[in-house]
Amino acid sequence: MAEIQRKPRGRPKSPFTEGGGSTIQALDRALAVLSALARQDHASLTDLSDSLNIPTATTHRILATLQQNGYAELDEASQTWAVGVEAYRTGSAYLNRTTLMDVARPAMRSLMQATGETANLAVPDGAEVVFIGQIETQNPIRAFFAAGTRTPMHASGTGKAILASMPEAHLSRLLSRAELREFTDQTLTTEAQLRADLEETRARGWSFDQEERHRGMSCIGAAIYDARGEIVAGVSISGPSTRFADRRVAAFGARVAEAAREITEGIGGRMPALERAGGEPLG
Image (tube, rainbow, N blue to C red):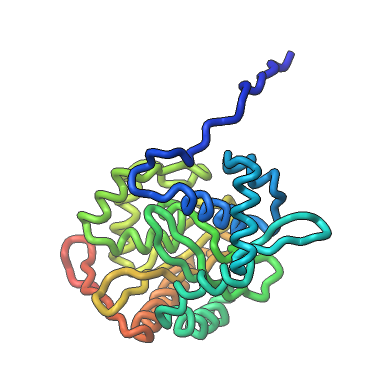
């Protein structure tokens, strides 16, 4: 017989409480509502209030304020809320501060055409990468990542390329806090396994994710650098593992690394002097 779990009485404790240090509670709540709207197409007032543990009346005042300033919109017919045009303009400012997207798009298109696989652009955020652009292949079976999709670095071709390019001190700090979560039986779930893979990535100049995040899907990535030689993004191709046969992987990797170099140079960046395993200069 299934066990019946009784719901605790009372409203769950909200994370938005006074005494939160130097933060402004009202602003914290407003940003939480806006972020919740950004994660879904539409949401009702009740759903937002319940999911964020913010009183309904307070949530409504926040939404009304966001609506007045163009950051939220109300669909009168369905009585659901969505992000407004000002939220798009504000978010776009992040990308507009560099020419990364403008430079990357033609390089990604060439990469997709040369390999026949979907090309992706992602930026690092903590122990994750966030996908910000994609050029889809015309193959009927293909990979797709919506803009804003996040994935842990250790289970991502782009993420592993970025990890392999980090200074050792930065890498060690990140790995000490990261959860190496298992997604498939191919996921690298120990630091020793991951570091061995990153060493191979440094030696080759590109990473290989072989069904480590999604069963049946593979990915090859390479890092993109700014003018200081620091990592700002990664470019990759992804698709069904059946199209990443052994004889094609090296050629794919070289093409991805070439695209990363092209984008790096296009944004005024410079490739760092990486070393092969054993200390021999790369390339």
